[in-house]
Length: 444
Ligand code: SAH
Ligand code: SF4
Ligand code: F3S
Image 1 (cartoon, rainbow, N blue to C red):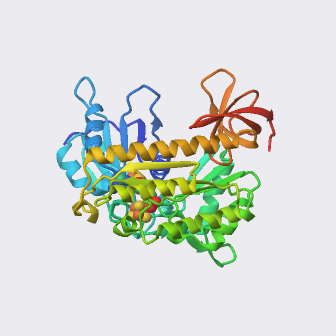
Image 2 (image 1 turned 60 degrees about the vertical axis):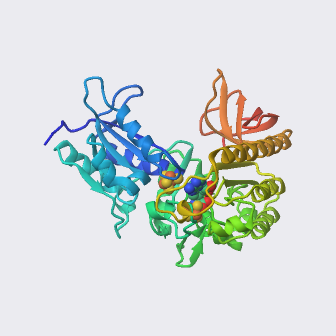
Image 3 (image 1 turned 180 degrees about the vertical axis):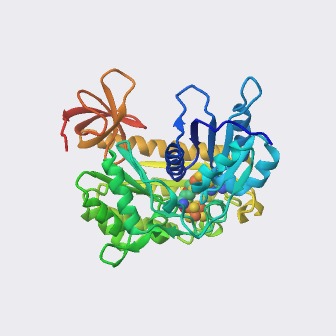
């Protein structure tokens, strides 16, 4: 049994989606509550948490190489915890293959991390990938500090079982956190400095709860309650599934000014046959009709999506339908991925796996189309005056970087501070950012 001194410093490295970023922040808060301090930049930490993502290939390989890189020159290693979705999916194997890993903890069990760290210091290795009935959230310390933008996980898990996807297995069934807990956490975030909150969920628009008056509400009810907080300026939510969209949430975009005009609604493919094989349970037409309803509620809404190219059996003509869909929508932003066979998912063993070169070539064409639309969207924004929430300093002296309501990165020069909401004229557009001219430093 190898005992170690109780670790004094920690580092949490999160990979993957924003929900992992949120979990990583909560783990860090717990470790701090337990008396550890964050390791200074560039210095070794006594405890390293690798908060992993399993969504696409090489996830596990990446974890093993990250573990290898943590080895110090004298051959010792920090205390290593593997958390997140790879931990959930391959925890036992990691424990067997990587002796320097002392803890494996799944996304629904990380409230037990501090106890596992104490065990690890006493020389015991432990794995916890349970999905306990009690919620981890009740065991986490209250939030204290926040930057100007904050994440708040409101819904977890997925019951959709798209045939390519690991999330239903790594995150478990869909569950909504209670309304009162979320309002309380949002209040703490705002008191700690947040001006913008992004509500998170694997299917965030599947969130349901009971509001303060005991009425059953959907996500729009939660958004409306948060919008009442005077110091909270902006609300966003992500990621939504087309099938969980409600009239009330669409209408909220026209009614609640603090709800930002941006919608991330993944579609994955422009072919109904491929969508069927993916078990997406929506069609191209139903997706487009949904976007039309959003545009009717909020004409300036910026649209975003996710795409997979090279799903098993995808033909050139079917891929062409995806390009057609991109043309039809004109996305402000979109994310595209090569299909990656995930162990244990139905698509991994489907006939017609698409060769890598074909996928590469399709991805390039799709990304060219998306980049063209992103640039066009940004160019169409020039001349507009809008509010920018300042998030950080830019690279040049006197330069600041923030986000427009449409989630564009905007940089500008002038007098401002992090957390300000300033009025800017959008002057010049690139594919990934815009240059703004500061008009007014409004301390709203
Ligand atoms: N719950 C969200 C997003 C889940 S994962 C949704 O349903 O939209 C984020 C994105 O990763 C997905 O939208 C999809 O485009 C991509 N993705 C998921 N599994 C994948 C796989 N096996 N191969 C390639 N991309 C994948
Ligand atoms: Fe994965 Fe589909 Fe669930 Fe999204 S909806 S998390 S893509 S199974
Ligand atoms: Fe990755 Fe898990 Fe998120 S697999 S995308 S970290 S839900």
